[in-house]
Length: 410
Image (cartoon, rainbow, N blue to C red; front, side, top):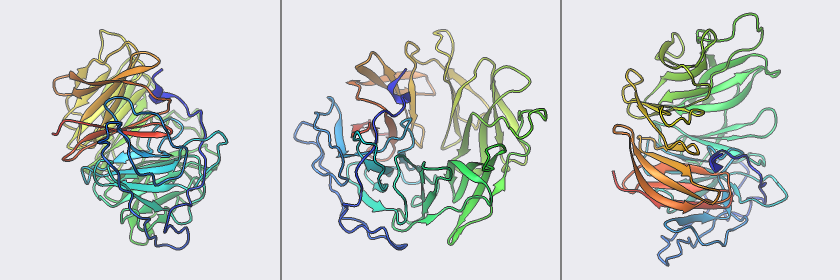
């Protein structure tokens, strides 16, 4: 198993209240002093600035990488969503940061970290009223560059916080009355898509709400006509989608992957009217676990997570909203992790052995892989994020380190 998919085995510690100028009271926050980063010109790839007190790594970065920030982690239990690149402002990178791991698993207050230069310099912001947590996720609005969401995964009703001014002020997202919001799925044009259920977890729904200057609108359930729900002999339980994604340019255009009830294999459906009607776009007859991505403009990607046969395709790409598809064979020896930038650049990672792995760039139009670097693998879990813009980079983070690898300009 690739380290990208390992579960978290080292806990998070230390309180984040050591920021100069940070306040956890009131609705408006004055940001802490800017943390200026060096470029690693000394040859070690080290950064000189640390803005979160945590367990700082003293290891020399792997050859070819530069360390950015030190003493915090952006990973959650499966190494996802702690960092996000902005589609609305190429070059912008946001994170939900906690102190780097320590052995006593102490929760800490999350910090919203924002970079406008692909991770070279950062600005930290506290989230007023946010409780301590061991895991937090960050989402970037694909159309509004200053709108972000932070979700804390603590307790039965994890809170979600919204900022529409790039971290300067925050408010709590109001959940559906009487329901529990499980997972925030997407944020596009001020529209939030999430999965919700009753407190007993019997009735699942796909729902959306619209942000306003004073809060958010009433939630609308949009799964009533979704195909391949389990039939009536399973009362109170629905076949929830395996994967959900939203067109970055249109919040009413939603894609879901469902396990077909009456046939083998998974099916990709799409709606252009917020769930009023759904169309079957593509079926993978032998697939049982699918990853799904949407990227601007009009790009859709599917990965068969179980197929590792050398004679079949594992990645499927559409450049026209799923109307036409082409298959791409991945390196199948050990499986492969895939990272896609907001504007469609692709990095894949293949684990060679327990200590090393290779990163490739992939052109989905031609199916051609270009080797970028073979590197020492760090202790997992990991996050990989591609940042677009004039100085594109691949950001690679584990529990105690955050590294950057410059990429060729577009």
